Amino acid sequence: MRWILRGLAVLAGLVLLVLVLVYAGSEWVIRKGHSVPMVEVAIPRDAASIAEGARMARIANCRDCHGGNGEGKVLFEDPMLGRIAPPPLARVAADMTDAELVRAIRHGVRKDGSSLFIMPTAALGHLSDQDVGRIVAWIRTLKPGPGDSQASMSWGPIGRALILAGKLPAMANAARSSQPTRPADMGRYVADFACLACHKLHRDGTMEDGSTKVPALAPVVAAYDPARLRKLLRTGVGTKPDHGLMSKVARESFFVLTDPEIDAIQTYLKGEAERAPAQ
Image 1: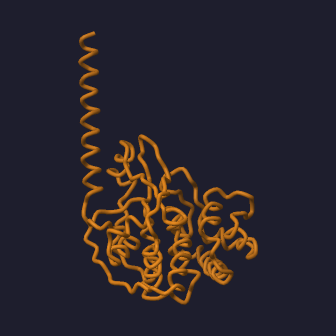
Image 2: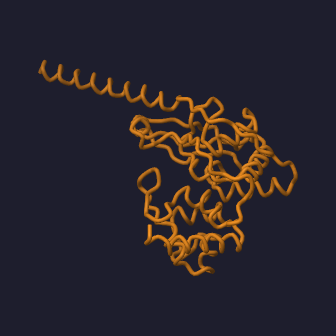
Image 3: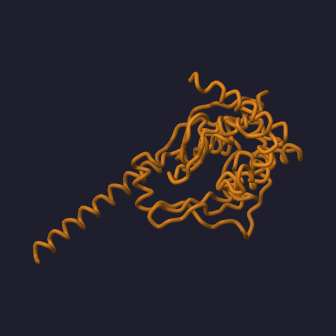
């Protein structure tokens, strides 16, 4: 009996040591500073630009994660994994300069230099100076309200282990892939900053939680009838009544895409699907 108790004590000590190492290591990753320079971007103040910023914030899925009116919300919560809670945008913006907001949106870096997590910086980095300026202009119109989420991001032991193992990576990204203004090819532009936040262009993948399968973007969109694609992106109804996450994103974000924008996206992706075998 004494040996059993000693064995259990040793096991408990090892478990405690592992938990301490995981916590300390993940905390280092979470707090680590990232040297990403800030870029000054013109922030418009006219009503038309602010309205377009609100629309672009929908297409880029900002309002899908941070709430329809930027009020913040809890996307996921599990005691072992943690709580994914994008904050209210008005509260965040109140403590940041315009340049810091631009850096957070495009590069995933907080005011203190640490990294954001669960932020699609590889996609949002494609936003032009013009459009990210419009989004910041829209954010500046938001006011804190009683309906704002009070939840904060937190990590459980499994979430911290995933961070330490690089399976839940810091999203700070110093790469600059944006242009001063919107490019002529709106199809590729929208696909880059909106669609590729979830999809890969030529191969199937999964969401960051590992449980949701995401089909290759180019062949799927290329095969759609144009009218049915417009219906999917406006209503979430495509080849079947419910496409899961895609239907949710369509109803909450992509419904503001114009017909020419949807047609341009499909034209671009058809071209990519035709080129895929040669890659």
